[in-house]
Amino acid sequence: MNRADTPALKKAMIAAADAIVAAEPELTRIDMVIGDGDHGIGMKTGFTAIRKLLAQTDYETPYALFHACGLCLVKSMGGSSGVLFGTLLIGGLESIRGLDSLDGGDMCAFLCGGIDAVVRRGKARAGDKTMVDALLPAKERMQEALLQTRDIDRILKAAEEGALEGVERSKDMLPRLGRSKGFRESALGWPDPGAVSVSVLMGGLYRGLSK
Amino acid sequence: MHWFAETREDYCPRWFRAMAQAFPERWRTLEGQEPSAVLMKRAPTPGRVAIVISGGGSNGPFIPGFVGEGMADAAVVGPPYAAPSAYALYETGKALASEKGILLLYNNFMGDYLNNDMAAELLQLDGFRVEQALCCDDMGMAIGEPRENRGGRIGIAYPIKICAEAARQGASLEEVARLARKAIERTSTLCVAVQPEKNLVSYGNGISGEPGFQTREDANVADTAEETIRLLWDDVKPRAGERVFMMVNRMRLTSYSDSFVMAGCLSEALARRTCDARMAVGGYQQVTDSYGYTVTLLCADGELQPYLEGTLCGDGFLL
Image 1: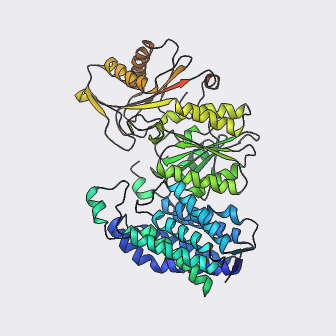
Image 2: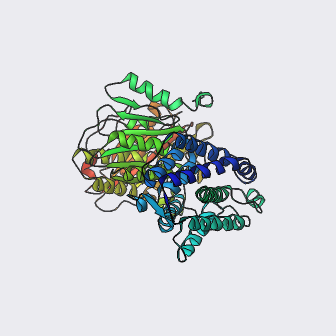
Image 3: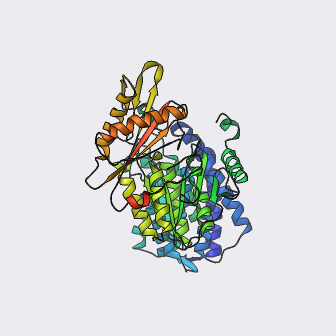
């Protein structure tokens, strides 16, 4: 599939939201061990709100669709996760302003803009065991794939693959910020829940589009 | 305070609503932002840069008491001690709809930064002009690190005053933001917590109860005042041509009279170093539930000084 119009992208967002909601028990289980335990519930709240919004509303453009979804996360989730996942959907909007449909190159530019915005805003570095550790390999894989194809489904597939690689690697990472040493070490062997959420989101977009 | 646990979600909205009820000629609220809360100037003046201050909800008068003529156009707070939501900040910016732009002015904490930075992006996508200035005056935090790693205290009161006056005179958004950053760069605040029964004084206590960087047995108030000024003076290092402005903020258990006696001693200690310092005394930010003060020094150069002339009347304080 080369391009996706707004209804197709909306279908992809719905699938991504369903995937996040379905992943909540797993996200909660991981975050109970290595975080505050609230990541899964926060994500479920935000993406349930998106699901509800999309059931009621149609959008004219991809820009309007992703803008509304990003705002919805910021409004419904609160806390840093709401801001950062909202940023992922909002930070790259300028690159798709005025477009009626997106090809793989547009999708790559949109997601990479969001990824760069999350990195800048969240101030986390690669290896800190955060969502950034899934986002950066996703960006790399998308940019590599773009050398071969401008098909949007293949770009999203590459994003998911990169994110999953990042999830695997995050298992060997120690969390950096604000945690005790004993706590930090007990996180070894577990992936970062934010990174897992990124992979679920990318995978949901990919499968929603190719369905 | 003790109601927080029961009514955390709507404590701040109820607080601001009652402020607007009590003084409707001065304030109104922007409703529907729970658990954040928004207090706005009753009549923002069109044609000026709008100033939005924000942070965690706490005892006051900072943050909402700094909304009014000569101060901010709106205050946005989260639940007690938590950052306001980006969405509430965004809605506030839209409601102010200033053609000259919006300055988001707030203390340097991670949650406040994330939400203000997000709100700035959302407002910019909607076509608004936005600048941010982060106050990092707490010299007790991030010792030995660059100033931008410090948290913010009540030193932010000075950039609020400076920016409001600059905006009133018609300055551009870039100009107002530049003045804010210049003032922030030259402002330091030291927390001085006193245990009177033991004559023990801690210097540099954090806003969330972090211990100070030094604790001493001080012989008397003058002794404490001298040490306070010595530490602050070493931190801001006033330069030739700068005038020193001092703000003495009493913490919650400190009496009105005690705070002036302390301020008098601080003023004497300051007079041993400079002859034209200006002083303000009051309860500006009564966060910490202890006895003592925060003392702020601002070194204002010839450009900043005119914006600090005059005394502004906030809600229960003079500055």
